[in-house]
Amino acid sequence: MRIPTARYITEDDIKIVKIKEITKKKYEAVFKGKLYCPTENCTAKLSYCGGRKAHYKTWRFSHHSSDCKYQLDRSGSRFVTGFKETVKMNISHKRKYDALTRAYKTMIRAENIEPDNIQLKQKEAKNRSPKKAGEQKDQSIQLKLFGGQIEEGHAHFKGKKLLSKFVDGVSLSDIGQVRLIKGFIKDIELIDSVAEITIVHHDQEMKVVFDEEFKNETLNKSYLDKFWSIKDLLSIQRVVVFNGVGEIREEKKDCYELVVTLGSDIRFNGEDLYNIARVMKLAVTI
Ligand SMILES: [Zn+2]
Image (tube, rainbow, N blue to C red):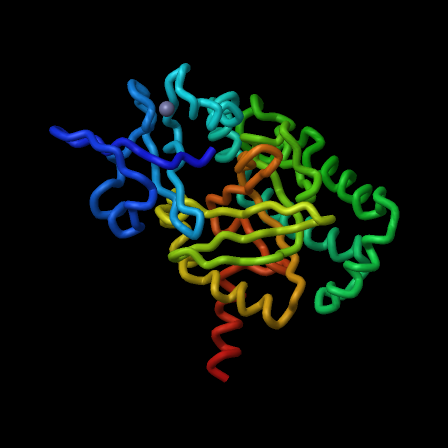
């Protein structure tokens, strides 16, 4: 849930700060770490989320009091907070890498197309029956991937699944879970060093978001300020396949978003963001 106001608490002052009064710069310089839920007696910390629809959201791991109206904000993820982090840690880079590679190949194969020619074929695909060969293949890949095999980690997590889903397949039960999401890019809005990406599949849309945690992660340094290249890519290839691993959050009722924490967890037409930016940059200079 988007929170419109926050309480700014310092040693000797408490005041209400509306979202309109805040900017990215001000937040970083003054308010960061000092904003709390506007509900009286609620101690949940808030963070600022910039962009066209700027809003406050609940700080990671922070909880609202049981009678706070923003408590719902967390109901999905709180349920799994305990092991969610562990699962995230436990899905190895290799597993995600393999899953992303397969997801892209499966999508391309399901549409029976050359990557450069996605657009036309995508339209054709819409006329097919909903139970497509690709979906069945997906299932078998999932079984292979997650059939109780364990590459590393504790026995406790044996069989934990990295389920892959198309945008239109995401449901309530996915909230708070790590998923591999498949779709096509509809739009990308650059925000600071990152972006908000709208992906689509069978007319169902979903946002892909990169929040403070993404920006602060040192592993992501090479991915910051690279999203312009996706915008450029979209202008050349109007259909770009998206595959990404992240946590599913409920943006608003029946509207989900994918929160990505690592730059290496996303692919565009099967490519890493860093590589795309490198290639696009070359294309510009030549
Ligand atoms: Zn609260």
